[in-house]
Image (cartoon, rainbow, N blue to C red; front, side, top):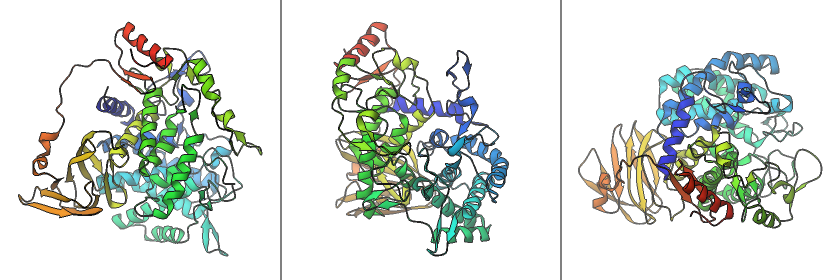
Length: 566
């Protein structure tokens, strides 16, 4: 089957709907039936400006296709006049407000308390600034990104309330997504992206030499920004919420914004690891499977698998990636939002009896919910003995993006001026990649076999400086630049400091023969397209394409029984 085959299909899936304006919605160009016999556009064609719309854009820079973000960003730019009207009509504030749900024009169609999930605009600002970091395209920043950055930051710099007795601002009447609290201030997820948006606006205004007063206002808010809510060694979704409460979405903003990077904020690492482990138990998981528990919701990959990857929790990140393959990939290569677990009912029921007797508080009542109520699989009804379950799943765009985003960050991370190779990939997995894109921008290639990195190649698209986390700590490293035939030897316990001119290529290896990296790349065989499969240790198999019916259904029957591929 191969990661390359799945990745290529996922890039294609995103490319079909991320080009042009208006950009495709959650279900892209694919239609599916809901609660009526007719084929209609899911969610009536509305955009939900949370990860439903944001996630499909997130991996495009890492996979070196920044052009795929253009349709999305120009759609947001088309919606900017309506976003400005929203700020005036809904809040009597200047700037621009992007609601949680809109029609393609940007008009607010959000219902009830969801109107107070206010992180949509700041999340788009995060991605708009990523576009600049990964391309350094000043013209695109001026024409497309900055008008949106400016509008969103102007709104939040006025919306946040000044508390003179503390000398701080607070984000009030705002809720953590889907937790439905408006009585608590400072939702942690929204704080993280608001902070990022304000800082990005300051940097963009400096780059474009404009909007000095707005930049000063943003700086004042940042200099008096509220702390992230926590109690003791636990993060909270809001201050005042008890520690053993549903804390959904808390970490994803902090890590997407690269704020709690263990390299620069080690004091947070223990707290965040504990939060990831808590989230791993509760969210999107089910014991309705043959053994242990499984996650079969793409959002869990984003909200839990990604922070695990950035924290170096490699085994957990890999489990989320493989669960996505096990439960969400269709034979035609599309990936669904929800998954299907092909499992034997009798074995499943026995496994459900192993659910621990623990409870979690939540925002829908005063009594906690027991794990057996949440993790028995009966809410989503995702476990089935139907051998055609994968074919009948409705695909959604989060799936391809989740796969590419997590796999890309496992191989290469570039936030905070630090290059990390294979930082989220288990050490026993061989891997090789060519021209993934890092911030800077820089194109990166590398190969690892039997746990040892063979070579790293960097190609700078603009002048860049990097701290490369050495995969050979304390050992001599050979470095050769395209600007010189000389080979330099350096040793570093942790970071190799590299400064590259525009167009310069640098190759690093421990052995001179490996400086000729082209000879190490896995050859492309040009094999004809054919059905391929992976069978996992628990007997579950996944197909890309279909072989003959006898082979295909026999393998699924083996998966259902837990005996594996025949």
